Image (tube, rainbow, N blue to C red; front, side, top):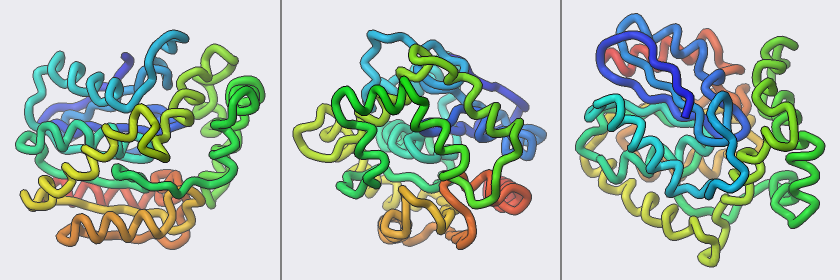
Length: 266
């Protein structure tokens, strides 16, 4: 598992989603590393981490990987910043270690069961065709470079997002993440997600300080999910960026970093 480890001070763990990698947090890492120890891992199958073909890319394993990493780094107290799949993974860790979580920053994600999924993502789960689209044609990571933002990415930024995913073999994790979306009780990861959703109540009851920064133009994690979070964490500070898309740290660059830094500094 590859990870970024920058700065010193209270630990802030940043967990990315699919099909991004730790590069997504580059501006936030720069903004925080003068006062915090920032850890930004690449999940197995993503970014600069290994991409084994025979690995079980299930939600529970990704959660365990974060536990192993933080144990390895001797981190027993931290704040979390989560986005996309990083929400389920990070909240999986948080609900199992609620006493060690200092603060939560939630960016366009979900960590509870839902059957809502865009057709364009559902198609990527279909047998045979899904693998051809995601792994053969790069039809998940490449479209995200323009579908997940409202402001066009610079060519070099889009290229950086795609750099770890240049071949069929390198896209195995992207495809397995899509297939691991648990839409029904029959899915192997459904029970894990239910447990995480139930565990969110413990974090809310602890009044864990929470910041919700949301891109209102997200085609996947839309306002339905935003309302779910505000209901589950009524004490959260909320910043709704109506003009930002799914990659809220890209569309909100320059505005989001001070919000998060101020929240973590309090």
